[in-house]
Amino acid sequence: MGGQTRTSTYSYNLLSPADLQRAAMTSEELNRKVVEELKHIPTGSVGQTMLRGHYNTVRRHDLILNPTVPAKDALLKAIELVKKDIPSFLPNYDKDFFGTGTK
Image (cartoon, rainbow, N blue to C red; front, side, top):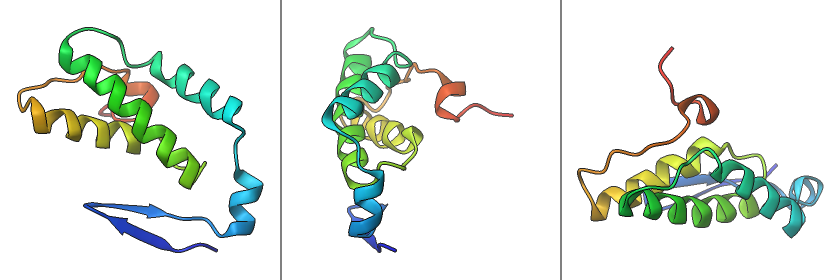
């Protein structure tokens, strides 16, 4: 199995080369997946637009490193990035889809 790499405050579970090859997505699959996920983050304010942009970038990066990483991880990173510029930002997204709703 792969190891764990730490960058900044985030750690990524990296797959072994053999596992990565089995789990790898084509660029078309990756694009389709991210576009579908972005439907759960509506457009709106400047902060919301930033959230969608950061999510797009972070999610693609995460999926390339490990195609099994949950969408929630990229969302939380993207929210943190927006809040660095807009501390009062209140994100709007589908909490059920991303698994961040309270139960």
